[in-house]
Length: 164
Image 1: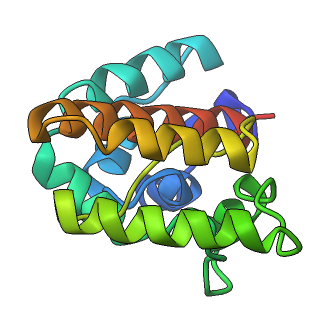
Image 2 (image 1 turned 180 degrees about the vertical axis):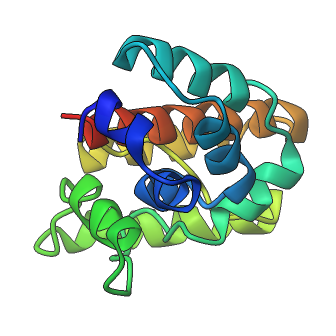
């Protein structure tokens, strides 16, 4: 899809076209309502601006659609397919890595009360594990900010890829 095609969609079609980027209907509505966009850069800049205002409630809502790192997303939807593709660096063959991620996920969820979120695309399984272990030392406010940064990166990456 091109920005020009996105501009021509109905409001409902536009929201649906980007819904796979993040499970935040308000974000999708704000992007759809701000059309037309002169370019992809303009769209991405606006999307980043809207995402910069996300808070802990937004993170909690968005995490409802994210699997644990190292686990395959279930479902046939576009977001589940993207999660499976993004986490492809965690091979089913590497049982030690999968066990370490599972253990780290449990520790993270006990400490912070939510699923560990990281932009998996472009990272190896070992890099994701190292980040998980590093972030376990964060205080709750630091970790909230890191998780929001990761959510923004994932969302904007998915949005950009939707227009290529």
